[in-house]
Structure formats: structure tokens, C-alpha cells
Amino acid sequence: MSVVELSARPAEQALLAGLRAYDDGQYKLAEQRLGGALKAGLAAPKDRAAAHKTLAFIYCTSQRAKACENAFRAARSADPAFTLSKAEAGHPLWGPVYRRTLAAP
Image (cartoon, rainbow, N blue to C red; front, side, top):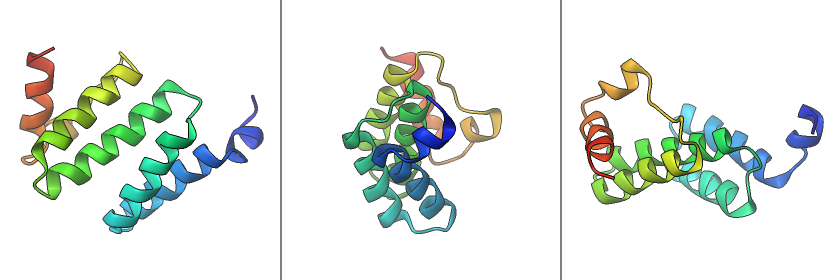
């Protein structure tokens, strides 16, 4: 499938909108768009993992540790090769939650 074809799909459009909203600090909108992207059926495992990862960041920064943990697990379930970058893994809010998900299956 081409990039043009993928970008025309509702799920991928919602993912892009969610990532943009997150980058713009519009976390509530980002959460809605990313959740919609997942429900609409993102085609690529890495895209599903990216949506779950960004949701995990939102959950952790809004004191929803269990939801954050579940989102990290969902990211790894979507893409078994999923990892955070060194900088992301060192973040004081979500780094410890992420490391906890690595330690427990």
C-alpha cells in the first residue's frame, strides 16, 4: 500500500491528527484522536505501537498510572520490537512505569 493510500485511510488520518495534537499540547484532543485511530484499525504494527505509546505519555502525565502501564503493554503487544528511546525511558513520569512493564510480563 502506498503512502498516499495509507494517508487516505481514516485510521491513519486520526493517528496523524492525534500526534499533531499531542505535539501542540492539546492532550485531550490527542487522546480522542489516538483512541479513534486505534478503534478505526491502524494497518501497521508500528503505528499501533506509536498510538499506544503516545497515549501512555498522556496517561502518565495526567496521573493515570495504571492506564499508562496498560498502554505501554499494548504498544509492546502491537509491536514486539517496541522500545522507548533512551531519553524517553529516562523521563521522570513515564520512565519508571515503562521499566515496570518490562520487568513484569
